[in-house]
Image (tube, rainbow, N blue to C red; front, top):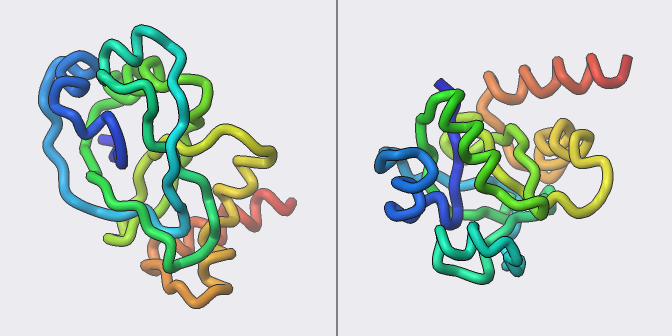
Amino acid sequence: MPKLFSYGTLQQEDVQRVIFGRRLTGASDALVGYRQSLVAIDDPEVVRTSGKTHHPIVVFTGHGDDRVAGMAFEITDAELAHADAYEVAAYVRVNAPLASGLEAWVYVDARGKDLQTRSLTASAALTERGYNWPSKWASSQRRGLLAAER
């Protein structure tokens, strides 16, 4: 089952019930190498569901000291598709490492270019700055970087 990391409205029980049809259970965790800000939401359905006109959004910084607190939820593939449908165009889903050593899907700022490259090189950038990833995640990222370079 995939993991989904939420730092915003997907943590709200009322939003979970609308999007997933149930209350999610998860564990506190943190997204490393990102900082949080707000984005205006202009989709009336999303505003109605969340009750908010501005949602949190995260952007990659590459600094190991930058962390965004949130929850890591275990969800199904079908529920992940429901989360994709809920998120507006300001967000893109990437796979990212968490402070606990888990990997999870997370919605990050879609603005900017080369998001896939930034996501693939996140561990390398943070490692250069002294952050030590759990070996399982770091080795899978190194394999991905080597494949991307070919």
